[in-house]
Image (cartoon, rainbow, N blue to C red; front, side, top):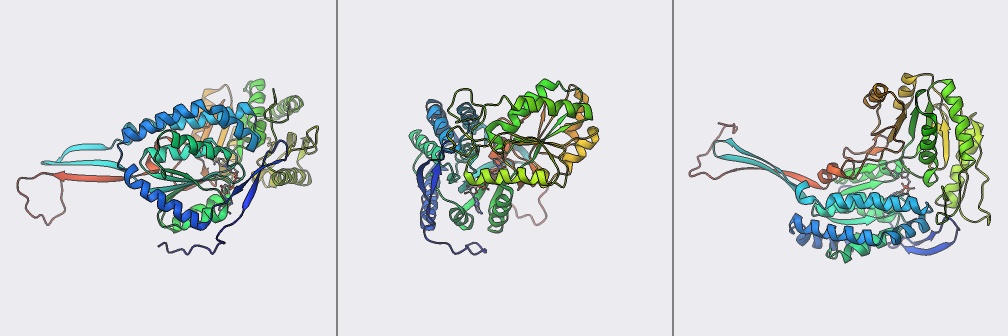
Length: 490
Ligand code: NAD
């Protein structure tokens, strides 16, 4: 048993409503799992691990190939569910599904990815080799903002490595996970290899305290990431916990202004700013660049089309909930009181039928360190402009922020871009790319308060996270004599 006593929790927490954020209507209620149901799921996963981990990597890879086909055939259903429960536009939802599928594609190559290393004759007649083995039952806890992509960052690699996986998706938009599970079973995965448990803190805590859970992958807000990391680590589990963000984009005086503005529009207001890689701070270098940028953004924001994500030509959908909408509006109110200049005020935007959790784009100028709207993650369609006089001030500003998920620089000078990439203390860097989300075969993760734990997600980091290394030293001697000194190569 773990040393940390599990908190006392009610046997069954509750069920919570799932909304369509574009209309405000309740779509259905999602039942939360009880602690007993968590225990039963872990037992099923342990049982499934016995045989799944013994399958060859080739066979597990074939299930993933089939899964890839099924995801491809059902991508419209996935995207439609995503838009209905999350609110992001349909094309954006399709893009999310695609980025998730690319991790499955990566995991299909698991026989190659899990290959170990071999050294012949490390001593006379002695060989040394290392292999990677699965951990056992592993868990993933995911946020509301990427209900397809983020679960797919985790479980395809985990199960390809031979683990069995328990997914606890966000209770706010759990519909996509249900489809992901259904298709995985259709692909031929045995029962218990992947399970989905719905719920909130009660379910999470039951997983964090269960002695059979070997690792926890988490993506969500920073306070919860920190809690997950602390609690799961104290219980002896391997943890990767990705948290919140405040991503800057530096605009150098030599950057093509029209490109920088277009990039900022998508990166700041796409998905209503509810992306951990959204740009929420624009950092123009020099007064002339700043003045031009603010003018151009103001004009461009006037063109943005806000509405139901299913609508044609819609650029931006609603926020996830009424509560979150009020929180984001509250930040904007606060920004005004703390002295930032609100150039565009989208607080009062509403849909023609007054339904849904909509707000318009907001643009602040004159934002400075120390302001709440600069220091904290807002997670809404609010872009702050923080003016700096030169490149070094831009680098210092960013390096002093507590979050360090993503960052971008727009410039036409290769030397400046290279220096920026070298000096900046942030996990993911874009050079003339506003949202530098690494491809599935690279790894995703921030630094500082954007990631707790040492290992990033997917790519080879994912394979390393979901396996443990074993080193074997072997000799097949004709006669073996006891050696009392430390063995050294002869
Ligand atoms: P959240 O932290 O509220 O919830 C994330 C998950 O944790 C959910 O499954 C939720 O049920 C669970 N949870 C919530 N409170 C908990 C608690 N007290 N104890 C245990 N479990 C709890 O995050 P969210 O609102 O769903 O998602 C938005 C946040 O996620 C933003 O901060 C965003 O930056 C972050 N995010 C980060 C990344 C990244 O890669 N760094 C990616 C996407 C989202």
